[in-house]
Length: 331
Image 1 (tube, rainbow, N blue to C red):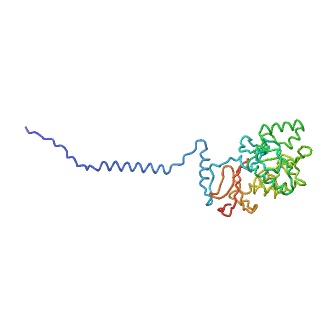
Image 2: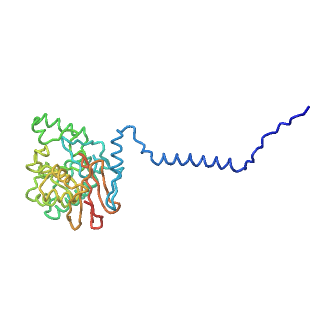
Image 3: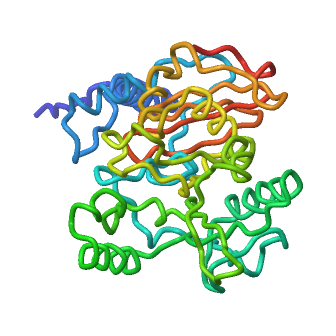
């Protein structure tokens, strides 16, 4: 009987590198797809914001600024701080945020009096008082000016207001005493002046008249303004006070004084000078300046140079550039 032999089918020869090449090619294809998907993936949105709002914010950030400028993402001060903060019954101020106060008694020069040992003000106002009142002494030998008020806490202002109501009535208090929490004295940038009557041992109001007139006329040179001028009560909420001065610094004190406006009007005026429009320009005591306004969420600053930032305690920032000839053009 014949025996059949079953043949195995021929096995084709497989090159050893081919499987590895196929695997590598597959990996490259997968990687290519991943990279392509990642490239076109939309930016991750903040879960706390509406997607359309965040996309609008991203588009806003992408808008280019003139060369030499940048958006400040983390301002060094809040809108409620700075030399130009507006404080009145509509715009309160937290007295607890005021720091770095100096005792007027311990830091004053020997050209004026001070009410007591505990009266204190901000360092900027302390320096201005010393230079201003010394100049008044040099001009008119006026040495009986008395600093009678500076920083006040909320509790002190409330006690003062309540006493005014009890003594003079609510109408008087409303005209001359700010509500607790709405007083400029909370900032440490405000002061009240008096005139000492050495013969009688009393203190009278500083009127800005007679020998006092030079001090009133030249206060702006030291960064001070008469905060509650005549005819502005409807805006300030406080009747005319010839004794109440506020430190705002230069060039702002010069502009406010020359234009005959109050701080409320000045804050409103500065809104007419946004970063992307004409800036408020001028010269103060030999130094050029530029001033512009920025909304609270859009603070724009130069990359270099000398500038100062102040919140207005309302809705934005005021930026003051000095020596602006070296600054890039903007607005």
